[in-house]
Image (cartoon, rainbow, N blue to C red; front, top):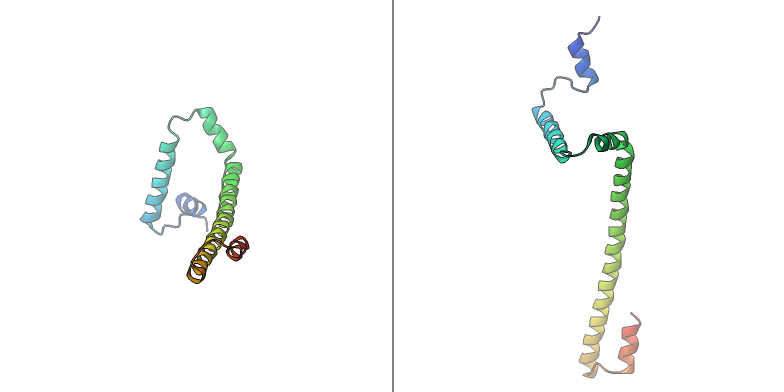
Length: 114
């Protein structure tokens, strides 16, 4: 049995008549936002963006992953620095409590070893 034109078109486009207005509204809002962002872009630039969309999306996705990884590494680095500073602070406090002074060869050796 042959399908009618509108039913087969809607199935091919991914719309199955579910009536989900929230998805349609979100898609329309995205389209409007994109159109507004491209106001003033020349036809040549728009053509370039459209032609190279896949490459641009891949590069920006890779950039997000790289910066995310770099952020994690930076966070671990600064966390290690924080822990070292806390150990040095504890050494200062311990030295002062036990010796009453912060000057001494033993203190300097323990502070440097961190």
